[in-house]
Image 1 (cartoon, rainbow, N blue to C red):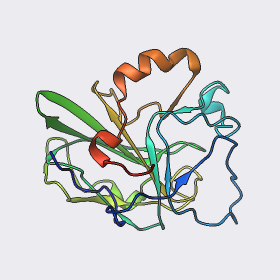
Image 2: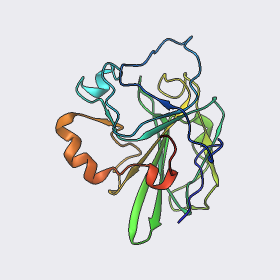
Image 3: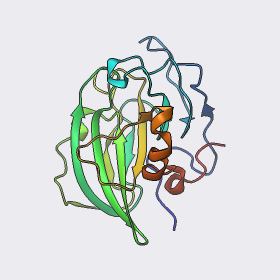
Image 4: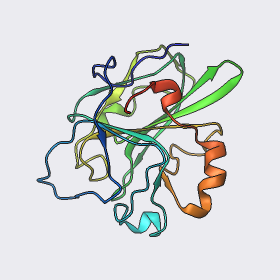
Length: 192
C-alpha cells in the first residue's frame, strides 16, 4: 500500500538525516534545520525540561523539519480522533491524533508541534482523506519552543489523550517497541 507524504518535500529523494545524539540547541537564533530526525535515536542532553524526568532520551517518532506554516497532511484515509495544545516548555504544543485502518490493524498517528490555527478544524469522528490538510507547522512560540518541525509518531494502542511519549527511557524501551512502530512503515525511506 502506498501512503501520502505528511509534508511537502521531494519524497523521491531521502531527506538529510540530522543526528541529534549529541544534543540540540534551544537558542532562538539557531538556523532552521532541513532534514529528518530518526526513530530510536538516542538523544542525550536534549530533553532538559522536567517534563522528561531526565531519563527519557530515546526518540520514538520521526522528526521532519520545515518552515513554520508548512502544511501537514494525513498519510492515509482515516478519521480525526482528538487534539490538544500540549502547551508546556519542550512539549508538543498543538497536537492532532488520527486513526487509520491498515489491513487488519488500527494505527494511531500523532502529529505534533503544529500551529495553534491547526486546532479546532475537525471534530472526533470526522473522516479524512489521504493527503488532506490537517494543519501547519508551528513557530517556536507555539510549538513548545522547538525549531519548526513535525514530530510524527505511530501507535498500535489508542492514546488516552492527544499525547504519546515521544521519547522513552532505556527501561521503557522494550515495552515501547511493542506499542510504537517505526513511522517509516508509512512514510517510506524518509532518510537513510
